[in-house]
Image (tube, helix red, strand yellow):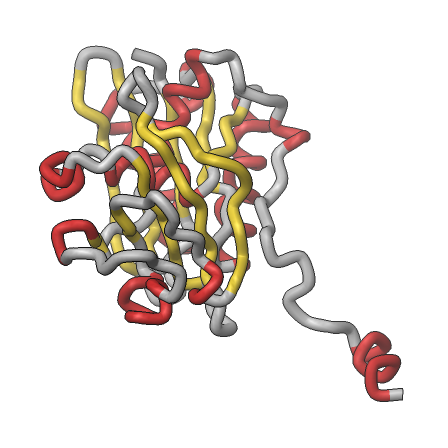
Length: 240
């Protein structure tokens, strides 16, 4: 088992996990209002101390690099940049929806549904959702089908989809099902699941096995919504 430190602060949760050989991962996962910056590095130190290993003895650091809350994504990416540069470690950037997907397929509700295709859809604020569709492959892992999208909830494509998960269900309710050709049963929905460092870790282990680690200097946040706010000059041009 590869030694990977995984971090995610892209949601309302501060989440850190550490994988160890022949042992269950060590985890810290807590909902925070704005306290992730105070918790993150102390938690990293706690987990390393608990495992009795140095940061520099890890193989890599994984980061949930978005999409998600902009401040949180930037915080996590900056922290990982600092840690990876200091310890001369490669990084493994994991999209938040991919991390949710790999956790979802391990839940009893999903397993009992027998679904092979599903959508992860999370609230992106501003009346929009981040969403992506996935299929279970022969290796029993989810494979994202195409890019992560940013649309109104009515824009989610649900043709041949057998399960839906994510916070968009809670936030937008029936608007999520605008393109559904048939109703979804409650057994085909999971509104509670969210991004967790354990999901980031699971994706990172897969990426490491494929040699997809990268130099820390290439690490960037994954912003699907590139223009959050217009500059004052752009606004004046629009109204000019």
